[in-house]
Length: 356
Length: 181
Image 1 (cartoon, rainbow over the protein chains, first blue to last red):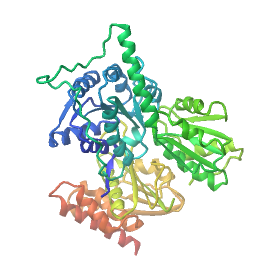
Image 2 (image 1 turned 180 degrees about the vertical axis):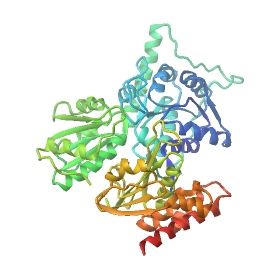
Image 3 (image 1 turned 45 degrees about the horizontal axis):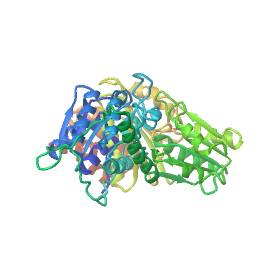
């Protein structure tokens, strides 16, 4: 059955259904409905909700719970995620599975509270220190927030690595119909590595400190091999009307929803436009973009930032086609009309049409 | 893409417009349609401007924000002054005449209804003005069915207030019916 639910709350409900029983966080707009929801629901489900004294404390509590083998989540918004980055690097280094939700707001600095996508670099290019990677999932609807939350927990356990769910203030705050589909159960991950008390077995150690450079390099090689497997197996993307598209828009999350309307409007005017929507931002869907190049004359990347994902689009295209960019920042949301105008410009069609 | 209706409910913080938006979006889903509800989430307080937006459609709804509402509810003069000119040409404007005295000349159907006074005088609580408005809006626009709206309303109000709300909804419906005859 479909129910009307707010994006932030749908993440919370999906997390509980995915077996998450621990949440540590600190409130910040526009994601606070998620901890609020879990504060009520987690104790009912026999779990632990804890509002920490800070974001830094919260991410380190996640480290502890993940180390003990719990399914655990934290959430925040842009400036709060910056505070968590040291902890995220430690989690990746110590190979601890967890889900981190970022409902982005405009930056830099304390910025504002309105929706933005300006943490793409932070999410996909490390953010924290050291050579680590994490899978970054970019939902575009309340339904997908729910589906990808469930998937995030599975991927985190599968690779023993943090997974980030990257949404924005629009997705977190809006209400849409959602159904919580029963998922085909993955085989339970046997967390034999967890520190659960070593009576009757050898001692487990969870650690990210390797003072011997040879050992640290060996650890890094192991991590890199794991990241390579993630990149090989976990790429997800969606294409829309790209079969014969001459102008291909690339956009994720909220920007992709708006771009879809613009693509439809362009088609109505006889411009063959299409859309590639990365669902994983890391690993980035290079192949999906390469595969639309045959019919494509130019690409347009649309983001709610000053141009971040466009760098990965350009890497994927590797100079074979021109890659244009259109973005709004600071919490401003591009309209379908603005995007259509960019498509028209690139296609060489005159101004003037409006989008209904 | 199919048929799509954009609604904006505006007034003053505390009038229950966000809840009203949620109820109408919920009703649309119960009618088997798609809907998206969004609201401004700025640092607003009771007494400040407030608005909720709902898009209802048969197909997928991509753009979640409302720029040119087909249906506009204004429950304060400030909201009326701010949003009346956003109305889509030929759209429906419903004004709470309790608080909205000056209506600009616009290209659309204008309904002036004493929503808040009816809530206060006939239900005994101005608090349910949002529900009176919902009843009137549903009757005028047909955007959601009366059955679905009633179900959605009853599922999202505190228990013990069912009768009060039911009465408010019916009064809104009748208020619109009278003016439409």
